[in-house]
Amino acid sequence: MLNLEYEHTKEFSPSINEHVYNILKEKFQSISVGDHTCFVFKIDPVPKPRMVSSDKYKRREATSRYWAFKDQLRIKANLYGLTHLPGKIACILFYLPMSQSWSAAKKEKMRWTPHQQRPDLDNLLKGLQDALCSEDKHIYEITGPLGKYWGDVGEIYITVSLT
Image (cartoon, rainbow, N blue to C red; front, side, top):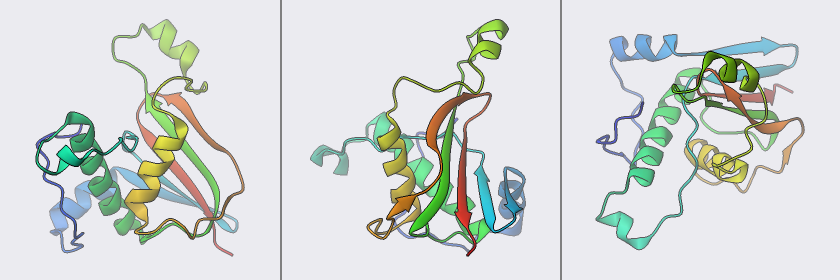
């Protein structure tokens, strides 16, 4: 669960202490297969909310969650060495966590099935692009699957080509 009191910082500082680095390193991983690398971010995906002018002085839960997600994703990506997304991306998959109140039978039935409700896929993608790119106009193609699915925990899979 994201801390809604989290204070967004415009500048990312890679100078975090070693203890924090080791804690974050345990929470995500990178997998290389052939000429592709898949980055697995163990974080609940958060869609980009519609920003309004009052967000400058009045906190809303949606924007607070989004800024915290954006900062946490940047930290984790920087630990990977993923400072920005390339122009051509092989695959982006979002896994949204199932509700704790669901029965075990319902969770088993819904696991890995398409997530067909809010948040919208395009808003999840906007949130991801804004977190990892200062300008996302250079992204011109996602060649493989782009989707959102139910999962046991929140995760984001980004596969990029090394060539």
